[in-house]
Amino acid sequence: MLPDTGIVPFLTFSYLNFFSRFGRSAGSVSDFMPKNSLRRKLLSRRHALPLEQQLAKSRAIQTRFVATELFREARSLGLYSPVNSEVLTDEIFSAALSAGKKVVFPRVREHHLDFIEVRGQEDLRKGAFGIQEPVGEQVTPLNELDVLVVPGVVFDAQGGRLGYGKGFFDRGLDEKKLKPFLVGLCYEIQLVTFLPKENHDVLMDALVTERRMLWMKKRTF
Image (cartoon, rainbow, N blue to C red; front, side, top):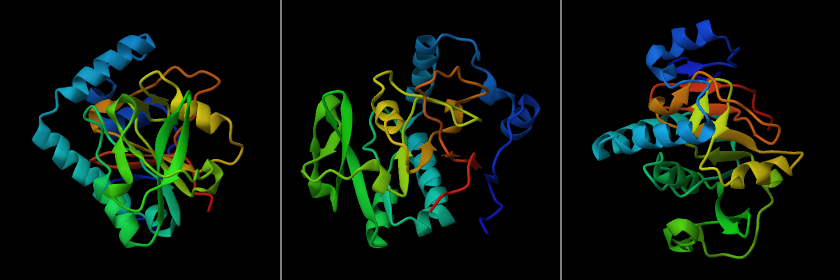
């Protein structure tokens, strides 16, 4: 059984449900704002977080995720190298390696992402967009991963996600019939009530914030 503290199991969405769980402030950004405007507004909100708050919230988010049965039972997972005040992943990376899990990170290849195993920080170097990328060559197919941890600019209570607009994660996941369990990491201030969705958008299976974990789907491994 998953611990009760801070966890919302298999959320059935309604606005009443959302406001009772998140509070009005989480949905204060207009739900009908164009995507680019919403992206700019939430990026500005995230960048405005003082560094000490970013570090403290990132630590709380990672600690919450590592404590889950999902993490404990995953044999392999994908992480990201954080940029632009994204939630950090270093503690998840360290915990996964210590537990003997296979860990992969993405590397940009033209308009797609390749996921390559990383066994330590020495296997990463600065690549596209100034992001730390793996130096190896052996690509791991996404359908061989148990869990994929995904960054984003905005998330909603249905698992909707808005990234930077490049579409790397959506394209890679849309092509796969068998997907890893998708976990979005975000600060509470990145949550809105509802995001407009398109056919190619991929929904998260769970979200982790510094205050809680929301489950949209049961794990499949």
